[in-house]
Length: 244
Figure 1 (tube, rainbow, N blue to C red):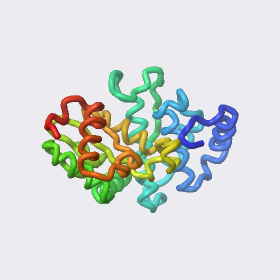
Figure 2 (cartoon, helix red, strand yellow):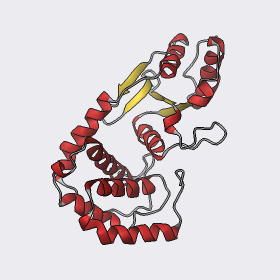
Figure 3 (spheres, rainbow, N blue to C red):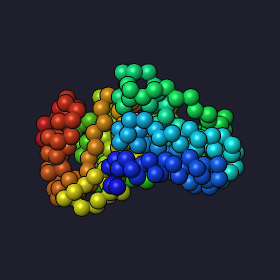
């Protein structure tokens, strides 16, 4: 659906099917379902998780970490856990749903051990930087702003492409994989990218995203500096104070 909300009829049909087959779901189906349900609510596509949500978590509880023997599946489950925690965190924070009723979910103890460890390991190791990402960091440095590349958040759960510690600003360079449509005429952020922005907004004073299709078209150092100063600074006023 390109990141949009599913039609109610389709959602109801999927929910009924999930509830019916939950006890016999494969590890992949379980991870996909709990992640998808969590993302729909966290991103505001639906108000509440579907009734099958708790049933699928019960299926997680009936399994062991060894049943999810792929690190990607463990990461998916922990990401769903983080979304659930975000939705039920105290009011007032970014992304919290005020009308979301408290949900008592059964979650296995290994979720905060094996799954958490897999997630944090992935955060530490999955830090590939592109040429454009490094170019953006270099421009920020040339503008006289102290920065750190691939800074891990204090809780160890997320990594920021570029962090400006003096301003508590995260700068994310979003390449083609962060969008559903890789045409600059109609770009829609992926759900994972939207979730990243949401979680980082809980960690920093400001999150600034730089789309690849805007930054890479700039062919001179002067143009890139002007872009960062005039466009990025609009999102975080006062960050760039050095004149070109």
